[in-house]
Amino acid sequence: MTVDAAAQWRVQTNGTITIDSSGSTATLTIENKKMQVQILSGPTGAKFQDLPSARTANAPQLVAGTTDQDNSPARVLAIDIPAGTTNLQVLWTPQWSDQNFKAVTPPSVALADWGLDSHN
Image 1: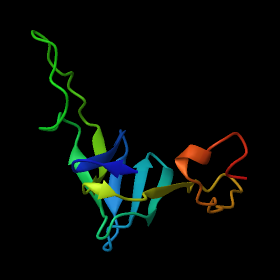
Image 2: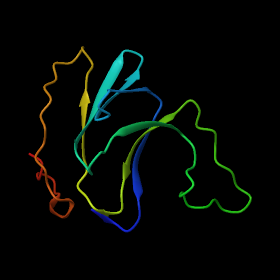
Image 3: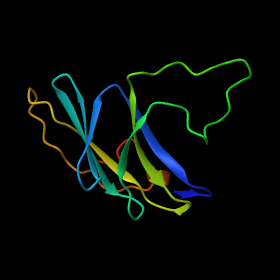
Image 4: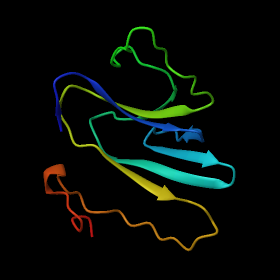
């Protein structure tokens, strides 16, 4: 993707966010369910951040007379993306123990080439 200005990849969650020391793997936890989220590729120095679920300074302005709803206790898992051309791949892997699940890293497919079977 190419962006003219710095951007941010963001996912809002009601889960607890834990980020490993490298910043490249995060775990989202709700009750006894966990989801591992990994940065497979991204801009140099890409790291996860745990942020409050609140409007950012760069977010579009609200319509006059309206306000944001309180999203507490939701949090935001975020990755800063500098201006320019970059490739960001984030892998989501469920970790719950009551399923017999084998994680498979999908192939890297350009967005323009996505289709119903492009990641098989």
